[in-house]
Image 1: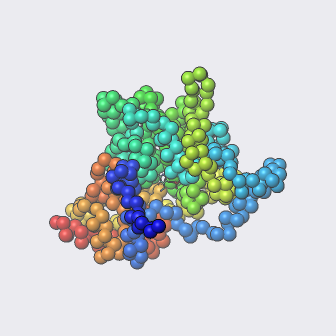
Image 2: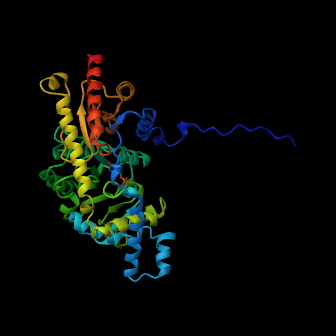
Image 3: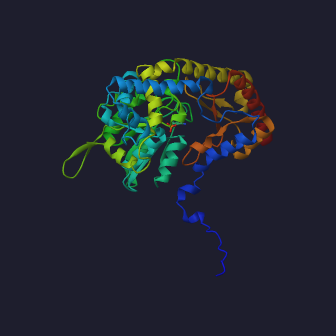
Length: 440
Ligand code: PMP
């Protein structure tokens, strides 16, 4: 019988889930592509930790330390073997250590049962959204500009976030109140508000203490949950303001945690603190963490035991205090931030700066700052910047779920050396001057 040549199947993009056509899901690819295309450029784009602090041999010592800890706790050789080689408990095998660390570092006092260890904070966001958003009536509000990870996760789940614009000084509760009223007027139920309260990605802003209290008050009055995501606080210099979760007396806050900045991103370990009570129709009570665990069992089954072992070993090395592990890194990032602010000042002296229409914020920590420029900071401008001036940044418009940020760019200083920062800022100044002249 003659073989019939079959055409390969061709799928129509329009018939795939709408999220795969969402520009948000392409933004990181575009940045990676630009970075590869212009390897000589100084890149202020990626929010990566500085790799000068990573030491390959340390990984083995961390895993060994965790195994020794299990032995001290009475684990048998079989249990230790399983702890590395086998499928693990879905909610995580290092929940006690995470809860202990949260108590010591962050004054967050929860039982280990309220913690779910996840594949990065990204999975924690996904699980929390899946569990909390039951239907189209449930509204997700986000402080905007906001981290693309939450916008992307929401869109994968068919949830369209409602942006609450940050003002010049960052988030204001009064603006959230207006947005809540608008959602209610549309017949929707504000379910959760997502925010990065400390040294936000992307804007670099930090929520003042009085706004934190006001936000918790508002959440209680208007009956919504707060999704708190704060990966940069413990890699920032100086004392940090209290987390929303540590101020939360009625379990309004689901805290989404990440070890990517404090320990290392390759571990892909994060966690959710979800101590909210959930009651079923028969009056049986459990925790939101239990529901997140059920969802996780169908998404990633469990977080890699090998990764959890490395993370646990690092936590044990500092008796749970990730803040102590990060004294050097936070000083490094603090210096990097100070350096870029100083360089920007030198490159754009007043009164020329104001006349040109350039300004920036001055974060006290974190990885990012925002620069406003007098021209559209779009992909085309980014390509000119990389090609003609050897400097890469991120268009701020990527971070606005409902439009905005067209004249701003995000600079990340975390993984650059001081020399790169100096050179990169000089190149950026030349790019800004040439772009301003071009569009004048
Ligand atoms: N939240 C924010 C605000 C972030 O900036 C990042 C990392 N870029 C994450 C979450 C992701 O964390 P993880 O690597 O733990 O998934």
